[in-house]
Image (cartoon, rainbow, N blue to C red; front, top):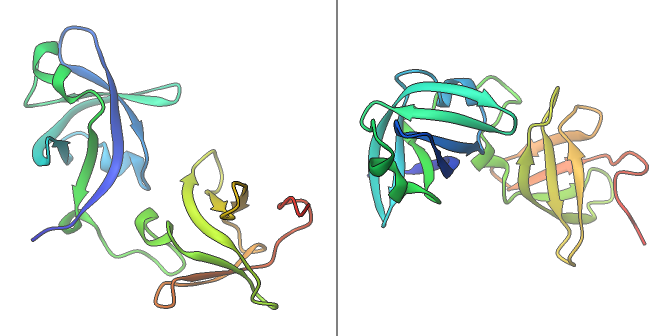
Length: 173
């Protein structure tokens, strides 16, 4: 049985021709939402297959049309639904590259002292490099840039990320 990985969320419809507004939450946005890309809409615990027909980037979301739907009435029910890809659609990555689902949930520790800072709860992609949101478990969180000066080692087997925090990255009061 296939595993599925979330790539975005349908937040609204757009127009009358079946376009949907999608907030992406994925690595490789261009690949995941390319024309003819296969995705799955999770609706009432079912995985509905869909094929990307068109995609347009607008501000913080994507306008996506699926080949299977050409009317607002067909897509209205999917508002609030998450979009997924199957594990069969994942490909091998180069060294020091990771899928979001591999990083989220990892424990973040100091490279030298092994002090636990928290757990990666979210990944943002604001520009040149990803930023990992680390939940400290006390209601606080901090942003960790995914750059070699900060992230020293990722050990997927041990489920930890070893880091060297730059001054000012974490509020220590």
